Amino acid sequence: MEVKDSNGNLLKDGDSVILIKSLPVKGTSITLKKGMVIKNIRLTEDDAEVECKAEKMRVVLKTAFLKKG
Image (cartoon, rainbow, N blue to C red; front, side):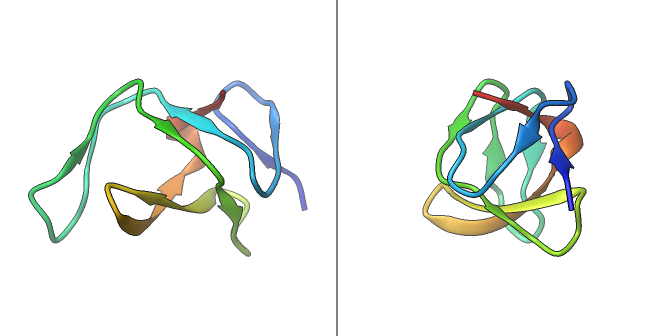
């Protein structure tokens, strides 16, 4: 399975990514800001999503909103 970011670059476990759009986190009042660097991502079974830790909580992000950092 190949997981690609918004620019078509391949992602793998442990990569760092940058958000290309501000994203509100469902169920909280937190918004992840555009340009935020997220380190140490983990791939999921879905090739359009990655799991990561941001703002001290685990979140699942769509790869369409990420670029490899």
